[in-house]
Amino acid sequence: MAHKVFIDGAAGTTGLEIAERLSGRSEFSLITLDDAQRKDAGARRDALNEADVAILCLPDEAAIEAVSLIDPTAGTRMIDASSAHRTASGWCYGFPELVGRERVANALRVSNPGCYPTGFLALVAPLVRAGLLPADWPYTVHAVSGYSGGGKALIERFEAAGAPAFRAYGLQMGHKHVPEMQAHAGLVHEPVFSPSVIDTFRGMVVEIPLPLAAMPGVATPDAMRDALAAFYAGSPIVRVHQGAAPAELLLPHDAVPHDDLELWVFGNAQGTQARLLARLDNLGKGASGAAVQSLNLLCGLPETAGLRLTSA
Ligand SMILES: NC(=O)C1=CN([C@@H]2O[C@H](COP(=O)(O)OP(=O)(O)OC[C@H]3O[C@@H](n4cnc5c(N)ncnc54)[C@H](OP(=O)(O)O)[C@@H]3O)[C@@H](O)[C@H]2O)C=CC1
Ligand SMILES: CC(=O)N[C@@H](CCC(=O)OP(=O)(O)O)C(=O)O
Image (cartoon, rainbow, N blue to C red; front, side, top):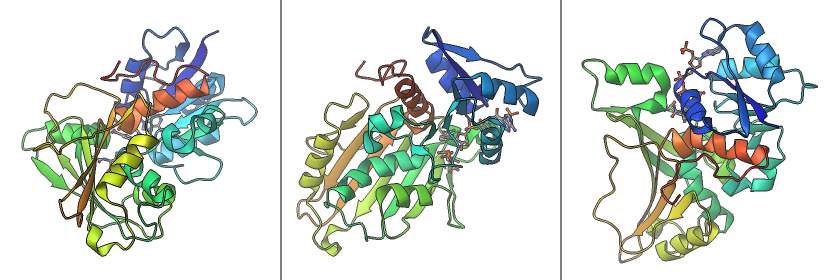
């Protein structure tokens, strides 16, 4: 029998992309609310409790409200795309490559990773775990995102006349992704996070510069690249690039949706500096693709079913 899935926030950017990935899949039957009902607490309560899996694609406060609407005896399992529960106890962090596929598959409540933390953690967490990077280094994270990363409000702003070409933000510090990056990489210090938005719809690059010469006992760039390649060996989603550094890494204006996550480790010839880079679709492995990956695991289905992978 088909798994009943309710996407709360189905009219939003992330919700729409999840629905696209699920369309035509007979393993699921979608519970839908029309426009008049989609924000009605009673209608949402009924849909949330009828679902086998509820996927929350809502602002944080609405996601917290949605959880409160679910009767704990109804058995509804949840995937929350918001940042409300990413370090909360009782929630599994939905990054199967890092936490283990079994844990996600058996979870009642899954918190989908944030888009920027996906790039950061994919690079740093396995290296810290392996002792190749120190847990007590004050890391810096530079990142650019397509404007769909800010949902409908930022899409409207960037598609209006007079939209900026570039936007640095998070300047008051304390971005909501910082606790998630620190917790799931097992870091002593909060990373310094400098996010920005560029004038393209989707795509993201996350970079961690490493002044290796100042980092005692740190591994070489080659050792880090090899360790990441071994960690993600066989992953159909995460690809660690080997070989000579390309001249440049680009984000196209007309990127097609995809669920891949690409990683690079660059180092200078002296071995005194390195740059760790991740490139992903903020709406793919950064949001909707990750939610569908976790949904597949919760339902005992092949992990990559319905995903948009370049290797497929
Ligand atoms: N965009 C991205 O790249 C990523 C987003 N996320 C997270 O996913 C979540 C959704 O983000 P995103 O899709 O971008 O945001 P959007 O603003 O595009 O969509 C949010 C949707 O939620 C609806 N909504 C708001 N309040 C309620 C409510 N009380 N009841 C029912 N529906 C409600 C909105 O309604 P209306 O249409 O009327 O405004 C909208 O359709 C957020 O928590 C975001 O942080 C996570 C990773 C990446
Ligand atoms: C460009 C942009 O505004 N991006 C969002 C993050 C998008 C995302 O990852 O959503 P979560 O916050 O739910 O993780 C921001 O910085 O708040």
